[in-house]
Length: 322
Image (tube, rainbow, N blue to C red; front, side, top):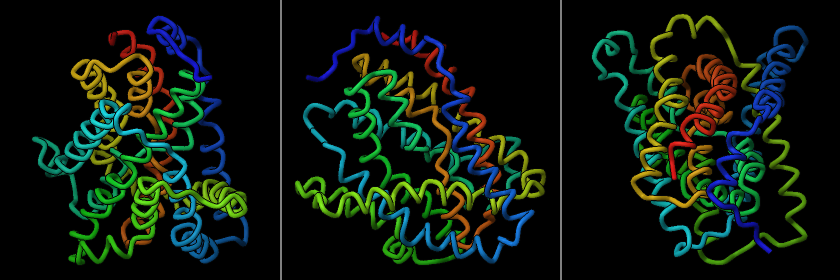
């Protein structure tokens, strides 16, 4: 029987102490392990370059396909939530794309660095999203988060590829068709809407492949991390992180008030808006020939920033919503 939460229940739960540092520690630890292995063991950059290819072309696509296919999308029951997710996604992408044109910032932003790192501001870590939504809003919260993931992942992947394909003067349509992350999410969504499911005898294998992609992707991000590029593009990095962790939760609150979302959906949207960025940002940037070490550094900083943005969204902004 599904769990039902009142607005008061969710406000108490969202404002109750949650150890966000403990929640984010596994991701941060895997990034650190990858960094140490690459710097202080024979597993140097040559080794991790092959790991990146494995993650990008095999492991992550399987994970994304399975995650999207598992989500039960009830368009009638979740239409407001889907609209809220699309509005939040559109605002995040627009804010990220517009950074080079902000007064006082344009002269500090290099177009190529921005093209590779723009995705940091709007992509999200779904592996933190689902357990946190279930912890704060039970089974209905986990289901609502799964719907947001299924709808927004294809949009975010396309939005991540576009500036990089444009910056490299590549054919955008060809890049989309060649991008395994986009192909996996799009086919997963199409199969979901068609009512298809992964056969039971294959699902355990797919689940194990997906689980390995999380660890390998985070460790690859750590192995590719360098702090020098962060210092050379501080204004861009800070701006991207400000959009991800400060502005998007405010936008989410506005969307909640505009659409008058019910308590569970309001809480889930605010969680969604304040999550650390996706670890696969690094893999995508590196595979498309952009500054992978810079993006890896921003992934690490975003993981740390999530320890502050989640309490900000749930403890400060959530009580302002109905």
